[in-house]
Image (cartoon, rainbow, N blue to C red):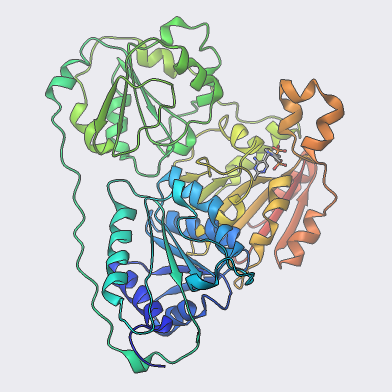
Length: 524
Ligand SMILES: Cc1ncc(C[n+]2csc(CCOP(=O)(O)OP(=O)(O)O)c2C)c(N)n1
């Protein structure tokens, strides 16, 4: 069974070329159909591999690895059928958060689709709305299509990087035999050299003149990419204010609270700008979004090929790199009280005595000492808005994801040896608990589970409260023991249920020791 057309050889081509382009990390999901790819990854010897049984988790874990690497391409490899479909959630998140996730899905040969063969579904373009690129390898028993498949790999690499980073899908039909030796068919064709364009500097003089005499509200959405010096320079302008929530990862503003600053938006006319400049990922604050939607002033946005109309208006598009644009557009200082009015945002309260949810966040906050803080969705990210900035790298899956995947994303980042503090609700923890299923239990991940006995976000909202009979179906009080779940996966477990217990725990626990998964249940 030699020859360049075999599945084993095409798998080796895939692995070698992506390696040559610079990829080093793969999350593999066990399977038969994808066995040639797994074998090629192992045989190559240069890859960092992890094996994750649940493809949904694997996708999110790869996403967390990409983050930890500074937003670099990472592949996740699945077998055929629903296994491949299970990557859809992570692909959707990667799309909206511009993360270069490579979905590599093994497929049956085309003739076996729709013939009641198990795990045989249509896999071409299954992530179509979410990817920058999708393609399929060609295979034939008699003809060598390596040249064609190599071209697909180069195109996928380029599309994952430019003009806007994001996920790509390569579907790889694989015929048996899965286990023939590779040596017979070497050497493989070489990967082409790829030069990615460098963002060009923008012509700014005319637009810059339009900033004169204006109160400018800069809204920096979620990102890990901002150059903080540039934004500090903007923040020092009396006539401008840079609004950034914690997930924007901008430099900490001493005891300033983004959600507090939004409290008086409806009443405080002095906070109204003459111009809004926005860019980056989502903003969490509903108050802020509503405020911006109601404004009747010009809205400018900056990006490279993706321009969400988050505030229902865009008056001007700038196709540019955000950091370069902001640096080039920095105006002279003008006399204005605009910045100081916004700066007067409610100060962060440092300490509260109660052991209610808000109090719990404030108490544990000084003990979040990891390189990264990952925030779960639902109540968690909303409480997070009230807390002081940390100057650490912070992340939340705020693109497409709900409560799925936060834990696996944190596992991905921790798998690189980066320490992570993850804060997560009890329902979200249970949903993604099998993300703790890892061959390495010694990751520097500390999971703080805020156990308020269900999805309490629903009872905090006006709508659900009006239909009390239905509330249990939304809140889903759960029967599982966080301790037993944690221990089932080999995590170290601790529980704190009152201010007194916290005082004892926080004075005796060794926070700097992070040798394995730790779960700290905070019973609200
Ligand atoms: C994948 C997914 N399924 C369902 C939902 C709907 N949902 C939103 S919040 C929530 C409950 C979350 O509970 P928990 O993690 O305990 O946080 P809390 O609301 O108590 O802060 C659910 C089920 C979702 N966001 N994502």
